[in-house]
Length: 400
Image (cartoon, rainbow, N blue to C red):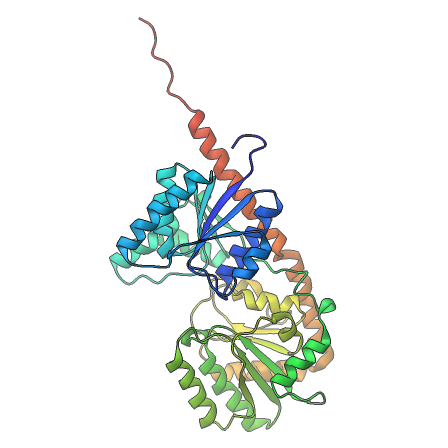
């Protein structure tokens, strides 16, 4: 890249709905725009389009979420044309389906290709392993945790020096208890049917409503607590079902079966996440499969809220046992219930100290600005490497 050239990055992501992938995409659009660059996002779009516009990014609406091979080929051609017409310097893919189109476009356009592993991809067959392998074909491959990096090196043919760990970041200007409007917090608690003088411990479980996130295990744990300590807790699930109506029906049936209608609430998708954490006493992440990073646990700690999470994946890095929260065996309702009771029994002062420990750790290790700076550095790295390759020429033949 020539000196004075404006950096142009094309990020390719399936949709712009709620989730860590989407939020990180927007954060990098913000960083690129703030640096004076051009932030293009090829995506099918979604509810976060206004946020993208506010970040300075430009949406290129394409059905890149498709798994149809014909549509994927058409997307490759359209992304290549876009890269040539808009002077794209780097193409950055954030999911497998769009990554195949993005990879083809990058090679056709002769620009560096970067990928980010936002999750751990299961592969039980040779075709699935090949499908997943596109994410390891980046000139640099970004892993969102050390756990993810180890998985990549163990399962893909990729050199270790090409895999860079960049943890997801938290917007510390947004997730700051000192900046929360407590009238909004009170309004949210009212929506949850929690009175101002309610003495119950408020448990908050933000996650997509899908089986591997462990909501059914948490309902079983709450049922155990209710038997031992009637009226001690209020649990709020926040998350989108994304069409999984049968699973939501299972959750509702489990709540009814255990007589927890007044104890457990399904709040649906929430945009007011800082206020939701501020309205809570404990944040819960009871996944039954490894979470590659687990951004919600970091956001909770940024807000000074103790965390209880499964002893799996990225949570083993982001939650310090006994210091910022507790880790429990996955799928074990009894252990989860015991951990919740343990935090309740700490009392308000000890919980606040645990919350402060978490907040300090997040500010030191998991800021949005750290993610943005590290990712911009990756773009500069691949551009330097590409420039070096172009300047290398075979030596002239000797004159005989």
